[in-house]
Image (cartoon, rainbow, N blue to C red; front, side, top):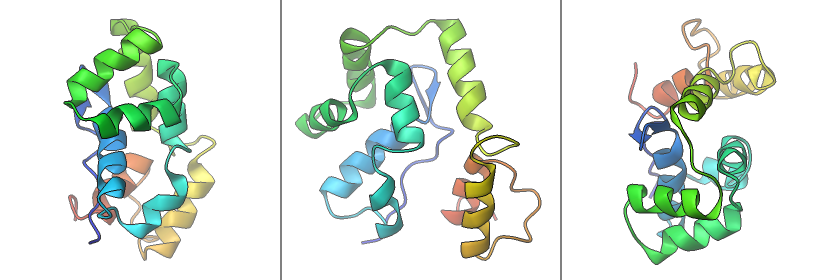
Length: 139
C-alpha cells in the first residue's frame, strides 16, 4: 500500500510534525508507507525533531512500535530527552513549518517539486506546502 503520513501541520502537545514522524514509523512497520519515504526515515526533519527533543531516533522508533498514543510517546520523549516549554514550541513550530523557505532545505524542495511535476507551483514555498500538495491534501 502507498499511504502518505499525516500532515506535518497536525500537532501533538502543541508540537507540529511530531505526529507525522510517528505516523511514518507506524506505517513503515505495517508495510504501508509510500516507498519514497523509506530512505529518509530518521533523517532530515525526523532527525531535527528527535535532536530538538534530545532523544535517539532508534529509541523513539522502538517506543512507537511498543504502542501508545502520540501524546504518550511525546511524554516519553520529555522524560527521556527534555521537556519543551511554550518558547521551545514556538521556536520549533516556526522552524519546521517554514522549512524550505530560503534556507538549507530550499534546494531539496526545488528538486522534489521538479521530480513530482510541481515545479510550476510557485505557491509551494515550504516543505510543508510540498507535503500537502504531493500527498493530495492541497490542490
